[in-house]
Amino acid sequence: MVPLVVLATLVLFEYWLVRIIGSYHKGTELQWVLVDAQGGLVGVVALLWLVAILAGPWVLGVVFVEAVGLTLRTKGALNTLALEGAASLYVGVVLIMLAIATMSAARTLIALRRLARARREAAAAGTEA
Image (cartoon, rainbow, N blue to C red):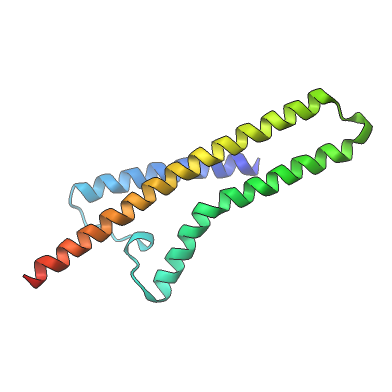
């Protein structure tokens, strides 16, 4: 269940990011700590959060593969080739879904950070002129 919950969370997170990018394009000012944090402790926390978003599903994938492998190993003589094939297919599908959702959310988040930084730089250049 955990990989499916993480997948749903990533899909919702990516949808939320797309909506935020839309609000940036419309010119509304939106402060969001993951995007707007420049430095200090808040910047470190934002960077750690970004790394967790990018790396967390991969760590979960490794744990998930290990858990399924150990479950199959404990079945011993009850383990069949069909069961191993079904478990392998299930693990493969879950890993592919996690990879696609993670990459999509990360790509959108990085685009949002670039957009926020470009807007900040343009505002700073406008105040200096």
